[in-house]
Length: 392
Image 1 (cartoon, one colour):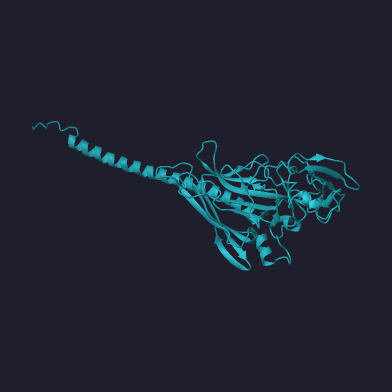
Image 2 (tube, rainbow, N blue to C red):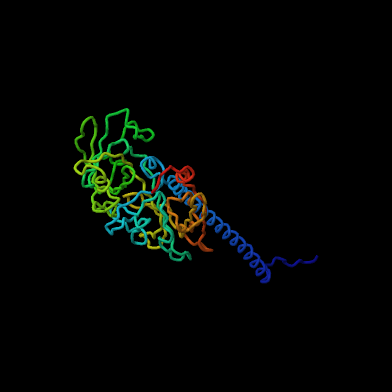
């Protein structure tokens, strides 16, 4: 009978090394796949966030730009999309302003465009290369853009305005109604004109008011009530002092002031009745977030309110314009051609609105660049069907 030796034995060193090597290869492949999946997930998340921010910012800008010159603005005198501002004192009216400052673009203010030496406010005001240079963006100076339209949320045109002989105080009185005056256009869902001292929708310091056809003023203090006269049912007193930060209220100006509006062909000792409308003056521009001193933001400034951020990490903002020059459309102009004015703009092109991701990730920042065109429908209509004898 043969004795069989014990055949049990362990792995050799060579077998262990081969197994460990194969295991490392499998683990390495798994790690690589996991890293790629993680990177793809991050990129998808960042792209989705950028697209969401793009849609929100683009939608707001498109709404504002398409409304340039809209509402009852044309009925009140900006049918050619321009109204003269005070001049003759050597003091230039400036923008964009809140109720306390006008230094939101590059730490300073911007003068309104001038024609033949006189400043004008237009439905669209281009601001090529007036904005900041975003550090690290590789782009040059950014653009700003200002849009003006009538504010239909406040039924100011239902009131009769009387400018006092000094051109610094205006009394608004509401006639009895309904029916309301023919100039009265009530916002949807509003049964009667709102009080002008209402907390939210009422007149506030910094609001820009267009009187009649060719006079502008900026509210400088809170609205106060007064005693109505005759059959009027409400009365409000509004101050337009020469202390507004944008220097629009200039009683001593030789042209364009509320005082001159009263004095021209009117009895100097009595108020002048006139209709009025509040404007929405909106400016878009880029700045750097003060919270970290690094993050670039798209900002929106409206009337006398403080600027509000629209989107973060916007590193470039550029506009071009289509201009109707006597029936000839000159397209994609970064600056207006000689002999034209902003009143001739019919289309705004966002040539670049560039955004980057919040974090750089493993392969750098993710980025998107928007290009789109927005028709200024009211200005286009005015160009196609001009009002006989109109001028700015």
